[in-house]
Length: 119
Image 1 (tube, helix red, strand yellow):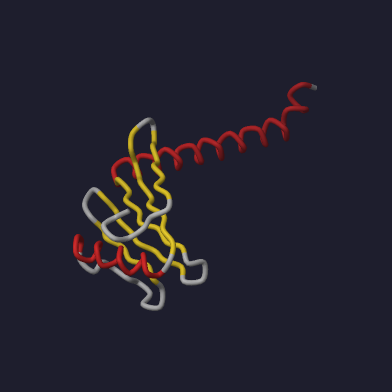
Image 2: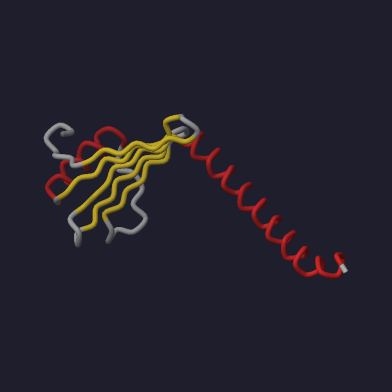
C-alpha cells in the first residue's frame, strides 16, 4: 500500500549493479485517483502533455517521475528514474550501436572483397 492506495507489484531496475529505477504497478481508477492526489501533493501537478490521457510527468534535476493510467486495461504505473545512471546507459547503448554498425560494415567489405584477396 501507499497510504490508502493498493499496489500490485514493485519492480526495480539496475544498470551495472547500481540502482536506476523503480516502477510501482497498480489497478483500478480508484487507486489511480488516490495515487495522483498523493503525487500532486508531493511534487505539484506535473506536466500533462495530452489532457485526454492520464499521463503526468515530473522532471527533476536528478530524478524523472511519471504516473500513467490506462482506463481500458484498468492498470497504471508510477515510475522513478535516476537520470545520471539512465543517461550513462543510453550513452553506452549508443556506443554499442555505433560499434555494431562499424562491424557490420567491416564484414560486408570482407564478404565483398574477401574472395578477391584470397584468389
